[in-house]
Amino acid sequence: MKIYDTTFKILKSVLKDKNSFSSSLKQNSVGLKKEEAALSSNLAGLFLRNYYLITVIGDSIFGVKDEEPLIYIGSVYMNNSYKKALDEKESIKYLTQKLALYQVKFNDDAKLKRDLAVADKREFLRQNVGGNRIRFLSARNNLPVWVVKSLITQYDDEIAIKTINAMTKMPIQFGYLNKVLAPENYQEKLGDFEQLQGNLYLYKSNSSIRKNELVRNGTMVPIQKADYYFGLKLPEVQNGFVAMYSDGKNSLYPILFDKYLANNKVSVLSPNEKVNSDLFLRVKNKAGANLSTYVGQRSEIISHISEKQNVFIYAPESSELEQLRRAPEYGILFDTNRLDSIIQNQQKGLDEIAQFVAEDGYLIYLVQTFNIKETYVRTRDFLQSNKNFTIAGEKLFFPFEQENSVYYYAILKRK
Image (cartoon, rainbow, N blue to C red; front, side, top):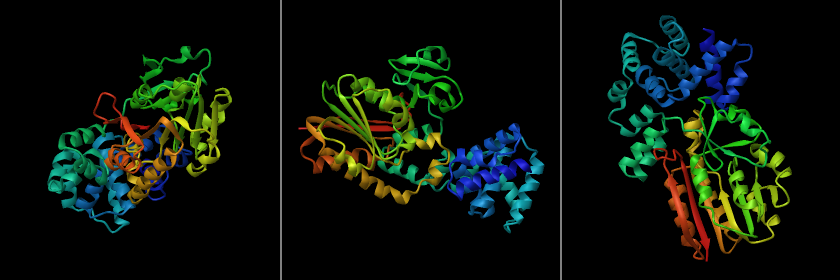
């Protein structure tokens, strides 16, 4: 079947070649009719959003762990359980033929178990992994086992379960008005946005906010609601120096500009111009003389920063657990072997940047994760080794709370 074959190519590109879902979809949809491309995209997306359930189905029913037969099993399961766009009998026939290529039999016992998985996912999991709570929660909520384990071991049971349940839901989408790039007539195009407070807007459409015209032209910057509340907590500075270093995509710059740009010298630094193209290619030419932008590694900051900063915001690479809700492949492809080096880099960065903070100035640390080793533990370790700093405020946002965010910030003041 053409739809299943295309879905296989998309998922193989993601799981085996480690490509993003969007690029895999684009690459493997060439020549398809619009409805064919949409159905293949839906099936592949459903597969990725139920990946950990599918691994249980593949293992406990078919004894399969390899990615290729697992893709066929999961694609047909997604169609027969959720989409039901392709004929179910023909789908089973297709699956049987494909599994035979891998010497996997679809016998009567396997059919009974598969029928249970289709009819009652929860009961199927209870019978097959019910004795392993962490794997049960992982498969039911499509979270990596290591994330479930860390939540249960790092927090009390109520917070852990609320977080696990909330992570299954798509986050509410918000945008922040970027006045630097906003055209004079931007109000005429705000149909999909509802102003909540200040420059914070709720995106009302069910489609991705990144497809919106105002987002594509840089007028509206997608943010978490926690970004906005973080902006409200930024210290007041007049006629001073403010800097921000971000390892990844930087969505805070319009908030930073609103707060500081009129009356302070602002420096924005990043090692990655490509992922911050709006900031480095368009914004810097319109923001005025008070803004300086630099592309380079953190170790090169010393060659750009000539003054001690009254506020220095540090947003390092992190486990970015917020991405689990937005990019279905993120948790599957994330290399947990990198966690230790990520955490070490966070600590090293805090120590390095601390030297650029003026007396009575602020070092602000933020990451989009609830991993306690990157949040509270990281901050306490820094304070333990930097006695000239004290904590002036911090907040960890969980996805089940009103802000609907995965986010942590700590405001550290130099004595």
